[in-house]
Length: 370
Ligand SMILES: NC(=O)c1ccc[n+]([C@@H]2O[C@H](COP(=O)([O-])OP(=O)(O)OC[C@H]3O[C@@H](n4cnc5c(N)ncnc54)[C@H](OP(=O)(O)O)[C@@H]3O)[C@@H](O)[C@H]2O)c1
Image (cartoon, helix red, strand yellow):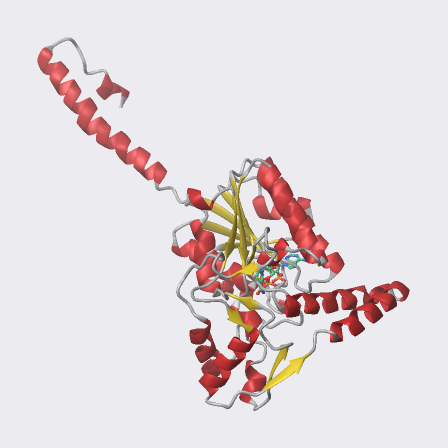
């Protein structure tokens, strides 16, 4: 190319020829090279890609032509059921690397491997919601990811969090909030995605209702509402964060399409789709006033019970708090202020699982909302 650039000899014909070559042929060649550089797929590193949402995020990014590396445990999934081969199959065309995100050396050596990634995404969360595990995953493992990202010059971090951290009363919420704050203070470009309820969290009673059982709800079933969002829609929303500046350096509460649905409305929808007369069993909230103090006291004597007491507090939280944007002035939940995204509705989801069953919905022991 330098030889072509040196064609300008002072001779007008040669100069014209030189200009043509430089401005058209060389321009096209360099245009081709810069365009192909611009088209280089961005490299994304995902932790938590074996989770309910993480799988969809990994697949969505692959479909959008990003180069995706998923970092997973050797035994992944609920109860560590999935082998490395199964994990690879689940994560489609993303490259899967195995190691321990809780161990910074493993994360660096087996995960990041000194490579340059454009974006790190975390869909990590404790699988139990227990106190120690929440701090280990929702805080510490995320902190490891952020440290590794900063050390290797990553420019962007997308975090899957939860809308319930607006009113923190539980340890997993405190762990998430601590990490959110450190992420915002870190100087890296961040997107903190705080979804409302996932479809899986509203699927727990489907089998019981199919078998003629009543729908169980707290109080009159109108104490709480949410705007549920599907895995695929949430994954699209998260993928949008990579390129959409309006979703960067922001906390992003997000729900699915339509109006907020109370617990009772969810039950009514299921009965309508089953063609059965609605039958409700109302559980009073005061039941938690009995359970929580007893378990809390017992956990002081038997520390192994501390998670039991926390699970009871988690139960009370979801029985009494909505998964909607909280108005900081009125202290009330505001459905109209909760943004909607996507097209998948709870009605369509219920129709599908009533026909096909709940397989793939990962209804783990404590998978209610957290
Ligand atoms: N459920 C809801 O309705 C709801 C609503 C709003 C927000 N959220 C939030 O959404 C986020 C994701 O939820 P999800 O349901 O997709 O989570 P999930 O299915 O429970 O997945 C959790 C992910 O974290 C990984 N993980 C857990 N413990 C680990 C450990 N010790 N070492 C390495 N990896 C570990 C899991 O890996 P393995 O497969 O190896 O276990 C999995 O990839 C959470 O922050 C949650 O709070 C949930």
